[in-house]
Amino acid sequence: MTNTGFENELDGADEQVRREHIRCTLKHGNEPRMGDYFDSLARTWEENLEPCGAKHRATAFLAGVKPGSRVLDVGCGTGIMAQAYLDAGAAEVVALDVAPGMIEIAREKFAREPRVRFECASIYNFEDDRPFDAFVAYNVYPHLMDKHGLARKAASLLGEQGRFIVAHGLGRKTINAHHDCVPAHICTHLETARASAQAWEELFNIDQIVDTDEYYCFGGTLKSAAL
Figure 1 (cartoon, rainbow, N blue to C red):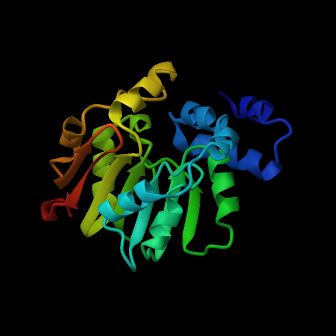
Figure 2 (cartoon, rainbow, N blue to C red):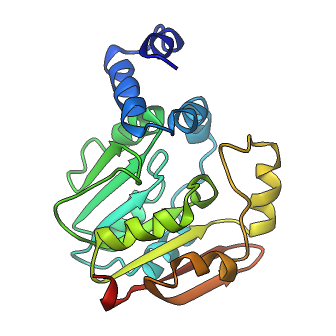
Figure 3 (cartoon, rainbow, N blue to C red):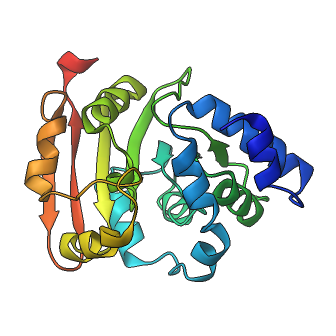
């Protein structure tokens, strides 16, 4: 779609949001449809969002977030995980999402929190000049289409002994049933946690696998050879 097409879609939107939407779309290349899809859900998403709680804090713990940690939050949505990182003592949180509407809401919520920075960006194109201690993908993995590419990107952004965690606050069967009505270009089927972890095993020592009706995750520590 051309820039003009996106401008027409956003008639009536705040001008800064319009510019951010177009910039974000151009930066993502093959991901504009993903950003559009979640943009359309942003306000409803926030209204129905469960508050930060035990599952979010557990995810931050499994990711190894501790005082002084630098955290990369991938597919952050409206910022549901940010408070869990801060509560664990994170010194800095960089949170990414491809939907400008999600980022706008997240920035509003954490406007007075200098330790959190929200960016409208694709993880596949994201670069940073300092390594992260933790790489977290919470409630987003089916929408990250290139799994092996994601693992390679995580390895490139983490420092020595850096950890990643892929997690969902619901069970795999529930997630997959929910995605039955989602367009195929927006998500992939969520495999068992053990099967999903295989895409990461070349670069990470996998030490966390949970696959229950209430919670799903796999994670591990960067191998020294991957540095």
